[in-house]
Length: 309
Length: 303
Image (cartoon, rainbow over all chains, first blue to last red; front, side, top):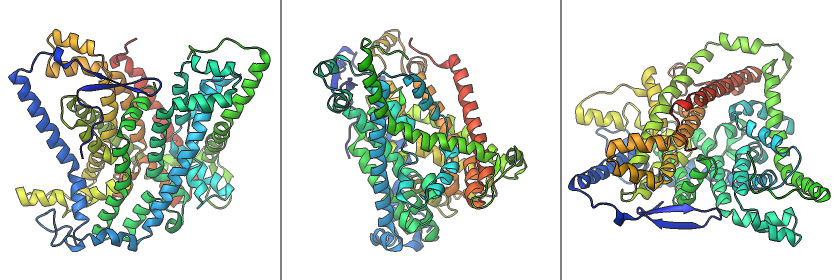
């Protein structure tokens, strides 16, 4: 697994249009390393790699535990390997509980929720960031104010609203209620505002209205920001626990992966081998996603975390 | 909030068309905001003043819910647990992730892969992380097993001892969340102007001095942001204690959100749960306001 977020001797500068200019630091301008600096660099490497090893120990140990026979989980002295390597534990997870259903539910609600968020955030971001209308800024401040309200304040009345809608134990309840948060709209608005106005001037002169401008100019220029929002939204849906726990009762049919995993661990009380196998299985998709999209992740954290510029 | 690249004012009719279309663009978000934020917020305030069982009669009871909060044997401990968790978790998380971000400097080989490694628990479903730690912390688990095998020391039963249980909830949470702040700090460090670093180097700043007197003040806005966000999320802690200790032993690790969840969905007392949720909201707002007040003392902005 050799991955580079930012190649070690370069700095990645992201410009407005999402293109990347790689600027090589002028290493040659620096004085050569003194012996003392060299020693320090080696020590820094050792420290970091030891820290990473310790950090990964729980996950590595969990993976090997998932391959042990159940009776040997807590054998003394602890060892990575049991008396045999049982790959069948992973298969047994799927026989023991409706695990495919959990994965399918999570996938469906996360993809659908992400699509809703993208449509809502980009259209609203465009209205707040590029169009002029009465009361625009006042409404936007109201949007931002809602960011202050924690989900916990919302879940109780939201559950009541779901009962009135007759949405308890439905996919709608898992997808819609938290797909209208102001965060995505805020992120898109910030990004859209940074796009130079001259770019759409020409289209406007040719008689393109806001709709065409939005679809043909603004959106194509914002691919990277949209991708970032998509990844973050997907992950937050995929990992959300409290709301699905509350709004679904029939876990066997509507449980998402986190909720399913929790109920699975209640179900399998003493089967630690299966619990570890199930935990490892649930880590695989997100880990692959992070490895595949790490460039966007770093960019996204920089964008979301540093004022969305 | 000024718009720098706004067009010149256009004629009335065009502006009207634009305003109409703008409303069209904003309408999905506005409808969603009304249905799924404004209605619930108002409803939440209303519910907190009612006896509001999940099923059955609802009666107005004035501020009785708020009074009942403080009579509830578990509420104040839950408030205390949330505050204790936050006070332990936030500094540990920020300091460790800052040290990591600085340690993973441009001269470290494989820093990209290492960053991904530290980020894995952040994106893993929390329940899976907790199950792994639950296994490690068993009396016969890895930690105790190693301690006994290597040092002949019998460690306490972490999850059954009320002080250790909270410490382990914190340790597990720090381990899980460290990657997120690390990436925020890494992004900030990568945007440091090379000229400033060069000037510091010429002035003889090296190693620790360079880190503490130059780098940390330069990225203090990012540290401020991360501290506030980490604080807000840690006041909302729920899954880790819920799955790791079940809030136990007793109510030693039951945080506020778990209390709210239990009142609303175990005991079907939605009114009381709503009142508790507003206390949580007040706590979050207060802490954030204090942070903003205090930032002038240590956050250094360029302009």
